[in-house]
Length: 240
Image (cartoon, rainbow, N blue to C red; front, side):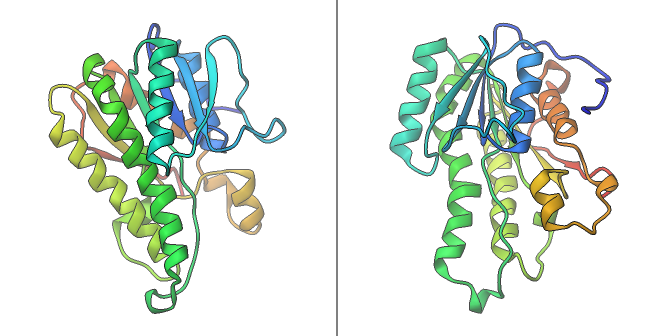
């Protein structure tokens, strides 16, 4: 069950683009922004799985299939969204993946490039091409970094590196767009998803954060309540 909302945000007459929309966090963000009144453009490289996804299409939710690692696809996506809905007010960069791995000297370039492409390149390209429209609407960007990006570590170095890149991308976007577009990111620890429970069956699942709770924070960062906040990396660890 999703947590009780402690506050409300009003996204009536706005358009939100949510990437990675077929996943657990992405579909929770779609639901949160739609509930707040936004027209939501849900984007992923694959259509949502009806059995596992919270994404339920309706008149305010529109699915767009795109490979966000391909600049041409991203250009076409942004053009289609603006043609269909006239504007972009919020960009929510959730597309990403986790991979463990080996020490740097044993890491295949292909494995490193996969994480760079999915975790960092997607957010860079989506931000790059949405920015002219976000500047017109004085909108906002929220991306997903990670708690582990705050320091180096053994076993998942490439993941940490790409998520640290999201924090620096966020700070750069905030600095370059002062007074027009706000950019922030959230830093989860372990998100309570079916995949994570399957991968870590013996962990303390009660300490993990529900995707809907993170979606609440993302919505707040896009709202007028966070109008003075840009360039922030917000912890969403819960008790993990």
